Image 1 (cartoon, rainbow, N blue to C red):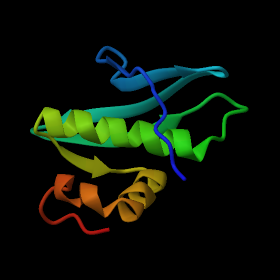
Image 2 (cartoon, rainbow, N blue to C red; image 1 turned 90 degrees about the vertical axis):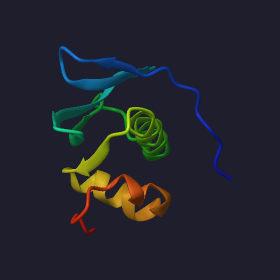
Image 3 (cartoon, one colour; image 1 turned 30 degrees about the horizontal axis):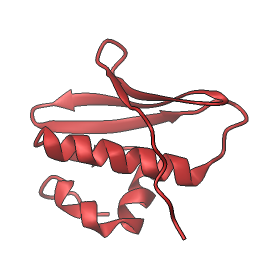
Image 4 (spheres, rainbow, N blue to C red; image 1 turned 180 degrees about the horizontal axis):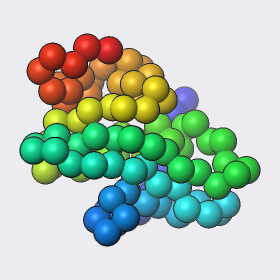
Length: 100
């Protein structure tokens, strides 16, 4: 049974990353913008952090931000491509022509 993890996400526009804090340290997803698209390029986690459910929840929260800002999402990182494949509900966020 999956349960929601409550997290506070900060959009650090200076560092171009979404950030949240966990017990082990900072977890961030780096991005870049081009037109109305956000390219998710890298996930940074503390050395001892391997909570895939938390990363999935973080990516879901970032998808909600993209929907709110009316952005298309371009997954660059293979781990984020896998997230899209596991969560087809977010496929509408992919720009035209992007196939996974």
